[in-house]
Length: 198
Image (cartoon, rainbow, N blue to C red; front, side, top):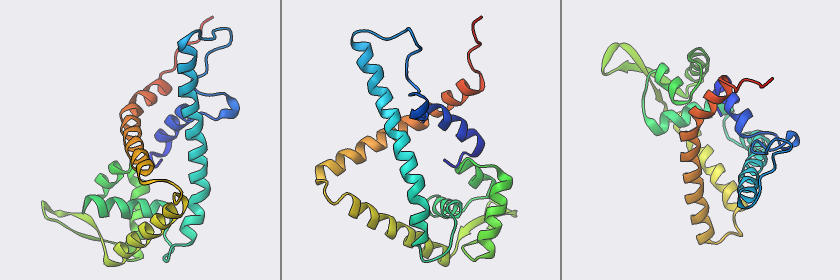
């Protein structure tokens, strides 16, 4: 996640490391009974599967970028992809879109401008401000990134049927929507933990 420190808090809670126990495990001595036991285990299995998925993507990230035609760091790809998808925006809006610190985004944007992937233009709504726009070079990097990504997925999922791929797409979209909706409550629970009982 590019939510930096705040996002890391949510990841620590929700994508708990299975070596320390699933995030949904019951406290010792309070084993659920009946149908509740199966429900808790089902949710814990989803959490554990997400831990594996997160780790797999982390291992894949560097390998994937090494094959890209231009040398652009992962964070730079995120900014280029966001600007390509959502159009020109101010640096502050870009920081909000990727949930990162404005000062961090400012440094990353300056590097992208220096390398010719992004350029600053006058904001049509306020000539005193500027918006960030992806250049032709930046769009080529974006398309190259998507092409390589799609090739990897095509190879990896070659044994899946069209119906299975469709089902996976629908479930992942639903999961992502629920993840985004739940994130604020996870952050609040981490920042305001339950008081310990004496």
